[in-house]
Length: 356
Ligand SMILES: Nc1ncnc2c1ncn2[C@@H]1O[C@H](COP(=O)(O)OP(=O)(O)OP(=O)(O)O)[C@@H](O)[C@H]1O
Image (tube, rainbow, N blue to C red; front, side):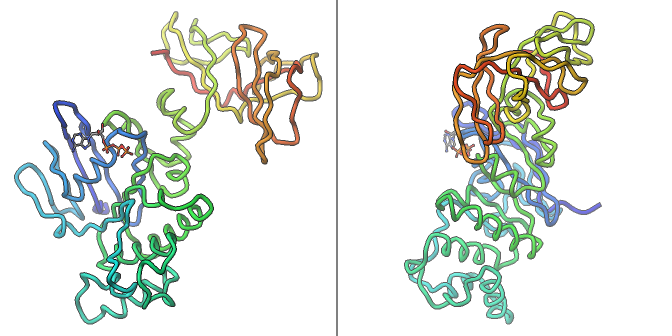
């Protein structure tokens, strides 16, 4: 077995009697990018600050590359943890050139070669004698990445490193950053509140809520098999259809859904993302026949349809109970408000959760 680059166990941190980090375990394997993802205030940054050594946990252990760097007895200072840091305000030293910024804190004979190599990798070689104020935000970000990687940290901690960049630039910089991190083979723990960023960057996502890790897995698995309604809704808009279980099945206007292992009489939420609603555009008002995959169709009346470029967002008021459902369909479809249409739902894409 490979030794994890970072392993934290049972980390707890309280502020004023409130558990902000509540028994958190995390592992980052060599060469892997793990994203700590969660809403604002859930404890992500505090977790990162504890790993970096600028905050002290109440209990729990931190190992870097198999070596204990912090428990409640041992406490290595931040600079001895072999950790690279890149935070939101990636402040470069204003009085040092690009080259001097990257070389800062490096010693040894291969120093100049290392700096030149990294500047080439991040595409900043020709700016090596410029000062930070002469660079754009994206360029400063690249220099900050090179500076953080220069001492070959065993693990890089990144806290919302792209949030200061404008939208158009951000995707490119994310991809470039990922390429550089992968080519250096650096293990990364990246904190973000943006699901899109986590899915784009991560080998593994750790989803955090109220100080706890509620789910871990590859982006595909977390998106397609969320543990509960909140985990599902964190990644996209969702629709919820209510039902009650009888004999491991739930009857709904869209047909029956399996609810294995759920006790009779339990109220459930059937959760479906807008892109998994199917609208029957051909047989207006007449209604298609039920199929095994899509179940029974139910009728709704378009309340609003918005053209969004690649897709249209269509809101329906459903005949069966007056509830609203939202569908995302290819933008060649843009039905008029007031149109009655039949809707089916992709049964293989539904999640059934007992109601809390
Ligand atoms: N030094 C502190 N003293 C008291 N409370 C703190 C301290 N640091 C953080 N907190 C509280 O702990 C909670 C978690 O904060 P943290 O910054 O870790 O969350 P986060 O998930 O990173 O959120 P954000 O993305 O908004 O930074 C918040 O309610 C915050 O107010």
